[in-house]
Length: 186
Image (cartoon, rainbow, N blue to C red; front, side, top):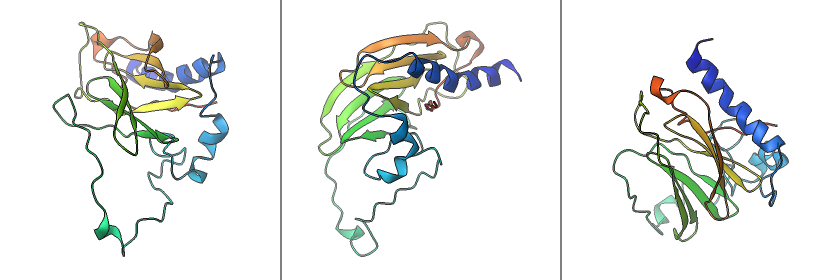
């Protein structure tokens, strides 16, 4: 196992350790909800929708007969130029998403109104190997978890966007980044 593989493997373990340490706050997204994510098709609780990584919903409101009647309800005007590679989470009507390089937004999924924005400042020493994109978040309880371009894992309060803690996962000077969406495991 090389250093890059070891660093990537460490990310889910760090999320597990953070969850096991306990959180002072609501247990909004419990391990049980994550395991049974498919039973909540109105939510999108993990990067791929659930631990099975199907990226598929069982919702049936939109079908071949009515898809032509869909109308745009809102648009989020991004403040950062470049491609977005993020998969949003939706938890009980709130959409959480990342925009490049490492910003997190919380918005009303119905109206698009932004509740808060967390902006992470990358280390000046970072080296990027594969583009300045952040691919998403994980959620557990009332905490969001984000991997960063400069190889940190950040915990963010889902209610107000305030950082709770961060920890270095790898050496960003060696072009290790943690831009994939973390996965909470228990």
